[in-house]
Amino acid sequence: MLGLAVTLAGCVGGDSSGSSGTGGTEDSERTTVSVTMGQPHEFGLELSATDAPAGDVTFEVANQGALPHQFAIVQHEGDPGSLPMADGNVDLDALDILGDSGGLDPGATASVNVELEAGSYVIFSSTGGHYNAGMFTGFTVE
Image 1 (cartoon, rainbow, N blue to C red):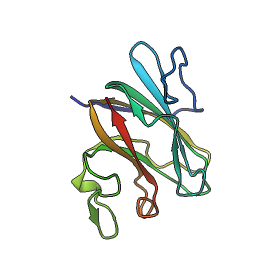
Image 2: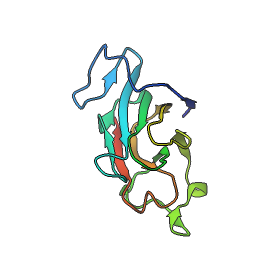
Image 3: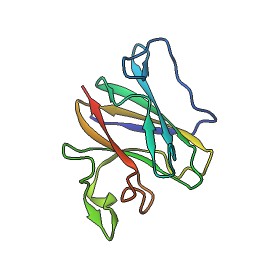
């Protein structure tokens, strides 16, 4: 069963007791991945890791752009650029959003905790028009 808990945090950070080979950190039970929204350009999205082991994952999200952004993650086995669309935006009603940061103003941060099973996922900004501007990336859970 997939679960979700969202906690707003004052800063981005994580337990670095163990490090994965792709830039995420993990402790005995949770993997942490840093997500920077609004970099290297306004509709860019950078991850410290592009994959994680199945289980509990915390995404430490920071909006370093000049516009509001909203982190979201969905399981999707196709091309990350092929999420369902409606009226020019991602059709959020057609998706099972597993984790969501809520709206993040410039400079804001959030921790998004999810339990992920093996598969392919898409991380994107669910703010209107941002997905179409290229603010998405694939993420793999093994």
